[in-house]
Image (cartoon, rainbow over all chains, first blue to last red; front, side, top):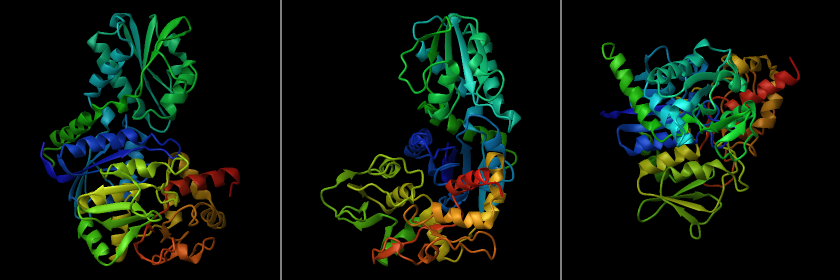
Length: 260
Length: 209
């Protein structure tokens, strides 16, 4: 991939409360920057600086790829980001720039490999056929597409036939993760949060919904409701995510090859 | 003009402070440090990315979601070889400020009034637009004073409705908020940040307009 005249912008959520929320986005940016593929690699955030609005004061290249470091297509990628970045479609030409708006990182098919890796490493030695795997997402009433990325991943992993069962669950949508023991049937239950950062949701909210202590240092498995519960860290913290970000850039080029 | 060239011109003109960061030249390149520290017995860092961590927490270990808060920790020295590295580090300390300062210097700044920013919001922040001008003025006085943020506000509450709750210097781009008496690069606030938007939402929810 030669993007030596292009800029890459990773757009993340960030937080005004949690200093670690933007860590993965910074880390993946640094990884990609070190590879020297792009002339510039920047980050911007909804809740931190630079804001989405400010990013155009930082970018110098005329051709810019924006990859939302978000886990799913939804409210942020379809409403907030286009509005704040001033985008009017996948390709926006403005102020002498061409801005290429990629799909969110979590949408890419290669996220499946990361999910499988997380699910396997959290319960080593347990036969995959004896595991109920739950992929947990946020879910929101603000956008119907928010849960789609999770459901797509669940369908892909289920189709592989490796795990005993694979289900989706959400914080703010049905099926709710609090009902994890009713959503699954097997003794070993592995829960992988499909989130970009280990923040409030994956550290506190989901463990509480699962019935575990919030923020407690966990030793997997946790015996709970007659099962063995294994809780993984957020998917977005994987160092392999930098590759999926680049995959999303390549996927954009492939999809829009005729339009450019 | 590229940001690195712009920065070179500013340094040449003796404008070597950006917020609380002072930029100095060394035999090998450049050295950044807190403006209240003297170069010398400081912990040394060599990567532009180190500025992310240096700017993240204050001296007491408290998170700095607003990087322009006057709470940058002291005791460090960031040694960098090239002007491009300096630009990158400064973009971590004070995100987007070099480009914004350059834009205002070239009369290309585009201040966005608070009302426009609030009216653009959706989802949980849509309600923030219901804040009255009086409530907004008082809130800006609480959220944006120089002891909370070192940026210079360039926007108004809405066209013709100026901010009255802050010291005049906070609204003048050439004003030396840190009173260093040295050349500096300003930190223009082109549009209110999400911290103020979130605070406006809280104000409306507490006392509906």
